[in-house]
Image 1 (cartoon, chains in turn brown, orange):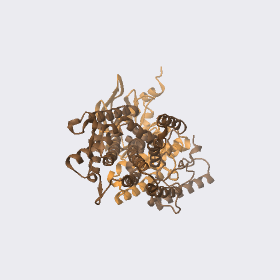
Image 2 (image 1 turned 90 degrees about the horizontal axis):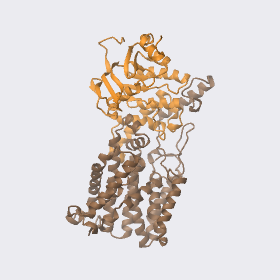
Image 3 (image 1 turned 180 degrees about the vertical axis):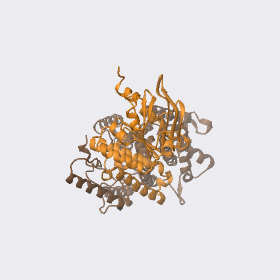
Image 4 (image 1 turned 60 degrees about the horizontal axis):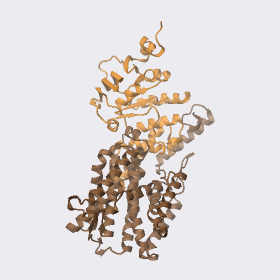
Amino acid sequence: MINPNSPSTANSPSTASTAKKICSSATYGSSKMPLYNYILIALVLVMSVLPQFMDAYWVAVFVSVGLGTLLSLSLNIILGQAGIFSMGHAAFYAVGAYVTAILNTRYGIPILYLLPISGFASAFFAMIVARPIIHLRGDYLLMVTIGIVEIVRIALVNDIGGLTGGANGLFGISRPEIFDIKIKKGEQFYYMIWSFVGVTVILFHWLNCSRFGRALSCIKEDDVAAEGCGINVTRYKLLAFMIGAFWAGMAGTLFAAKMTIISPGSFTFWDSVLLFAAVILGGGSQAGVILGAFLVFGLPEIFRSFAGARMLVFGLALMVMMIIRPQGIIPPRPRHYKLSKASQNKVDYALSQIQDSKDAQPTCSVHGKGEENL
Amino acid sequence: MSTQDISMNAILSLDKVTKTFGGLRAVNEMSFKVEDNSIMGIIGPNGAGKTTVFNLITGNYTPNEGSIEFQGKSITKLRPHQIVEQGIARTFQSIRLFPNLSVIENVLAGSHCRMKSGLFASMFRLPSQRKEEAQTLERAMEELEFVGLAHMWNEKASSLSYGNQRLLEMARALASDPKLVILDEPAGSMNQPETKVLIRLIQAIQERGITVMLIEHDMGLVMKVCEKIVVIEYGTKIAEGKPVEIRNNPRVIEAYLGKED
């Protein structure tokens, strides 16, 4: 999102801390390649060869972590960037998965076509359910979103309109086909899902660096001031929900295609809580959220041998984390802006003026250093 | 520039605007006009309803009765962001910046409503979006230079002094390309030299063709920059006129100093 090696002006209180760079921004290029770009390349390389060293079980674990990552990244738009407390993300995931399953098993529409269709269906669903509640704040909204997940799950169990197959769910969902290659092995899913994560990270990074991302940041900071600056707060909150739901819907498609069987048990309140935890734990930056997803969805697999105690450990770890580092593991860093030559000249000129006025007369300078006033 | 002039070119006009909170009439049948490209001040004792008037104009409150017209169009029922789009920008009495965002991002927030790039263009970083982004950044830097904060563009907003935070709020308001700027106690928490710079700044805003309305307790500033002053007490307008007229108005003196026995 930003580039800490950039030429920063005087006494910039650089809050940028250690962090892995998710997406290299070539347009913001500095002459030296920063450390996080190396980390990023190394990570991509490791991820791309990893399946060669893992057995089928671990590949499956990574596939489910990949789906969890995708969902966490989509929730991050709502929760991390816009600061809307939504614990109902599994509902959007469910809508995507069920739309895929119904359209595929009944009408034989190929999975890849269903990817955007499920996304739109889920975004549409988000628009309808979020519009009446979008003005609620913090914990009030949280309560309602919990209600939404439960309503969706119960509706699915009750076999709404004879479409969802009740508690048994739907089965016989076909595999995705890309250029006549049928994706069915775990390894193939690994590459498909993680490439999808990669593309998502880049698109979300660009989105975050645009006026859209800035609007969400403003809303998170102070929604009254945001509205007073001319940002349509309701519209942007709703859009954040819809984008998050769009991606959750697509993740639902990938999930349905991977499992070939889906049932309401996969879209419970608990799944929403885990996604919420992944985003909060991660801290709201994309790097943090990916790490959070690994911790929340991957770590329990490593400690499978302590099956009984792992949730206890998980809960404790979350509590400790919230106490010692409440901002999350990797909080978002400020966006980076590259000034044009003309603007940089303005900055340099202003700095030289201050220097002059300081030399000449020490008083009368609003434009001086901040600390001397009050 | 006479305030009595009937043919004056009003940019904003309030007509019998009333706002009640429960049983309290915070603003009572308030009517006044603001001349285009003038500087107008609203003064009055604490709790007189000055900020409520501003909140009514900027859409944070909706009047119970009466109407507000801006450039000949009714803005009575519009929401705050729509009013900004119409060309009214504001600053807040208690500074409301985005404290964790950088100075330049705070200004860019003001530019938001003048940008057009949609979701798709932003997500795929289309050339049109990048061009707009660069132009807006340039424009935002100009506003920062205007208020004299260009050299602090990359700092965190919360790290600025109060005086500079007020200036930053003004830059953010100006970035939305307003026709009318509403300043709520711009000199609050500013020291003497800072206030001097502020006075020049307010006049410079007027020179750009922008109308300025302000609430201020610093009478020196008000008398110096305002061409017209409206005095409010208990939500009611008690006087209106040029600074000289206001200074000698017995009702105003009474409101501020109490009645002589």
